[in-house]
Length: 145
Image (tube, rainbow, N blue to C red; front, side, top):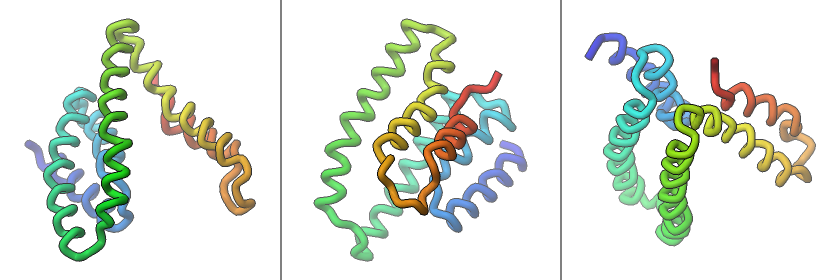
């Protein structure tokens, strides 16, 4: 472990605490881009880290009365099976497309954003335009060469 990793963790932890944004969406790209960590290792390490801290946070929020068990149950009912479907799909893509699977998966964010923008096309005038949403998704989700 190096002091740079500790510093990155400190900065990401501060941002997560201030904004509530998920640490994985910040820390995983930093591990891959700045520290050269294998993406699979970065994602697996983030999941293990998140499982510990989210469990502690969930107990604390439950104790404080901030959890609606029925809502959490409905969320689990949808997310648990679909996470397994996602892993199965990623494995299938890797078997069939090999190294080019990163390009296929890199187009996931813009496609999801486009679908979401289409679904929300009747949204309020104060929300970002479809073009802005698609540009943002393209900037974030497209694979780098």
